[in-house]
Length: 220
Image (cartoon, rainbow, N blue to C red):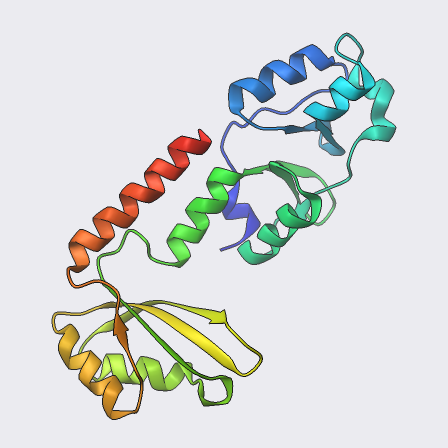
């Protein structure tokens, strides 16, 4: 999933002639702490709520304080993980997307990031969740996938968590009609597998409910 796929439709931006009051109104309405200032197709930068109050520019044109704008953006063809890294790097609530000529294409929000993560991890797909730990040198995505597919099942997602320099924990989500057969197959290959949900549908409904509650809490 690329940055271009994560753009939020019709998300507002600021003009250089807008003042701090207008910026604050939009930030409060959309529950963000930053907005992009766009001059035609050019990204001038991001202005934050704290900047506006610290500089006391509620009644001033934003362009007069362009030197305080934060220069932050991602390219349209950067991967979701690169976008997440940019959010962390710039510590911002939104980030603009530009094309190869640095022309403005749109805005990525936290909501679209969470939706992207949800799609990659197949959150809304029904399935069973398994986990197991192993030495990094013993990890083989091909072997894991083959074990699952030999049982006429599908690997929906795979996530790796580093616990130590040599040990990793693997979380997988599997669509299958016989989870016990898959667990037995993993055990024959010396995987110490833990089933995280006994009822896949109930688990996914609970997971989706928690995700919806989280999004509602953020109001995004």
